[in-house]
Image (cartoon, rainbow, N blue to C red; front, top):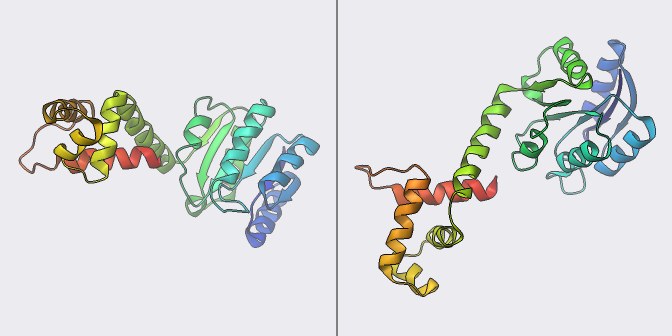
Length: 216
């Protein structure tokens, strides 16, 4: 099994190389940024790439975006995201075709044998997913699906609600009646599965769903 590693921490990168080599895994390249990862995969044609999500220069989502490119440009390549964080926006797109895909959290990997086993499954076209990753990706997908059910006008109303505007202010901004705004809000509550409750916090919960969905 030939592996390429993309990890910006020099200590962790060297540690991964050493541990994998002790298990007779060929490490073709170990790089620190996304561009070097893309070049290394093109040069060495590995069986699987181990990719940290947050890579230079911005330390945000360069790794997972590079993983998406690798999946498009090298269809047979296994990709294992290996990170401290759960990234939902791009990672959920990788799961649309889960064959040869893995996502493990660094702090939850306690056995190098299990890690190598996960690499072997991914390289062979299988999957290796941490349960915490699955839970968060499923939650993000469910929220996004609920928001997708809203009409464009309902999304406009919800966006204005998220700005803290009253029904009157929303009506003024959209040049509609307050009655129309009330109907839109009732539809939003229904589609987001927010039934009437004694606490009366549905408006706050709807805004939270909106903010979570747009961040995801």
